[in-house]
Each structure stands twice: as structure tokens, then as C-alpha cells.
Length: 284
Image 1 (cartoon, rainbow, N blue to C red):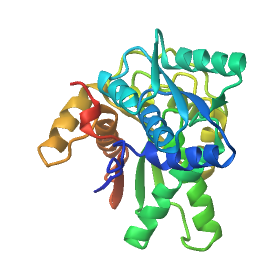
Image 2 (cartoon, helix red, strand yellow):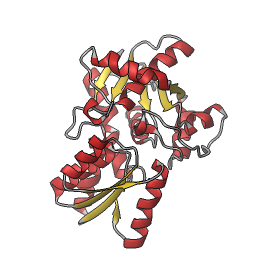
Image 3 (cartoon, rainbow, N blue to C red):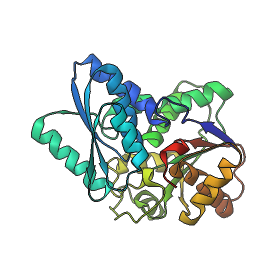
């Protein structure tokens, strides 16, 4: 098992990959003000790159977002608006502002430039190893990393860099798993679910806006969805910390899901698990 320390980024999560490309695009077309909705990490990243680019920024986050993530957003000079209710409701409130005021929607789910950044995750894995591992563990909420990886797989296969895709292990929280349910039922579009409380706040998306696209790729590439058992997340976080890896809860869920996968399907040899967010972003 290998860990890729993808939180070694300026804002301590992999979302910097997408934010760097998205805000560079905003600069190129003369955008001077953006809004975004986020569970925290994407908001951190967009706020930071907007600060660098001199773009005014407002980030909407749902109640229950880690106060440390909110502090980081505000530290970059962005306005951070905390919205009562679920992550999905937070997105609705943000989109209402976009429609009402015509401000640029720098959203990491809708905007295709974000995926041009997140796909570099897999390019980097290929460059660093000279190959792809046989198994990849990818967390899935709105699918920003998952879809970036899928786009990169398409391109690596088309370029002849690899002959076959690795087995993708896509994880969801036990408290919020619309994509897993849809995949198990053979559906092409996920039904919305009401998220239950979960430590894995970064993937607690009850209505993934790109759900149809995610499930389409999952069917095409034989992706296996598994739960990250809620009761295992803190234990796995402690396990990693004892070995020098201090990660946030959603990242610890990746290891919990890997163990769950191995218990159900057998040992996943030559496996890469992404470490998406630093431990300083979590409260517990």
C-alpha cells in the first residue's frame, strides 16, 4: 500500500490543483469577483488563489464546516458565509446569489477548468512511478478528484501510455452514499439522499450534480464503490498519525474504505491511497 501526500499544497488539500487552473482562467477572461459554495477545502483553495490574483471572493459553506477551514478562508481576505442546513442547501443559496447578481460562479463541480487541474493528480502518479498502480482508492462526494482521474485515464489510454486502467475503489460515507446505492442498483442517475451526520464532511453530498457522469464512468471502468465505516474513521486517523501522517477525517476515511474493500473482495495489492487533506483542518 502506498500513500500519496496530496495535501502538500499551499492550502493543505488536493483542491489546489483545480483552483489554480480555474482562477488562472478567471484572470484570463477578466473576472474581478467570484462566489463559490464548498464544504471547506475547495473554498480554502479558491480563496487563496483569488487573493493571489486580486479577485474579490465570497465562499458559502454549510453549518458544521470545520471552524479551521472557515478561518483559513477568511485569512485570505475572502468573505465566508455560513449557511444553515445541508451542503446541498448551501449550494442552492450560492446559486441564487449568482442568478440574482450575475457574479461569476467559480464552482469546482460545474466549471470544467477545475477538472483540468485535478486530472494532474493521475499524471503526477504516472510520472513519479513510471506506471499506474493496480488499485487506486478515490473518495467521491461531488466527484472533483474522481472525474479528474477518469479524464486522465482516458487520455493516458488514448496516448498509449498505459494498456489498461487500474481498479478504481470509490468510497462514500455510510451517512451519505447516493452514488454507491445507485451503482449497486444498476442505476444511471443517483437518487438524492438526506445526509446523516458524518466525520467525512468532505464527501457528504446528498445530490451530486455530476452524478450521471460519475456513474457513467464507473460503469465503463468497472469501478467498485465501498463504504468508509463511520466507526473506523477516527481509529484510522489515529493509526496514520502514529506513523507520521496527520490527516483530516475525510482522508482517514480513505484508509477505512480500503480495509473494508479488502475484507469484502480480498487483498488489494499494489494500491495507492490519496491523502487529500491535512489534519490541521479537522476539529477532533
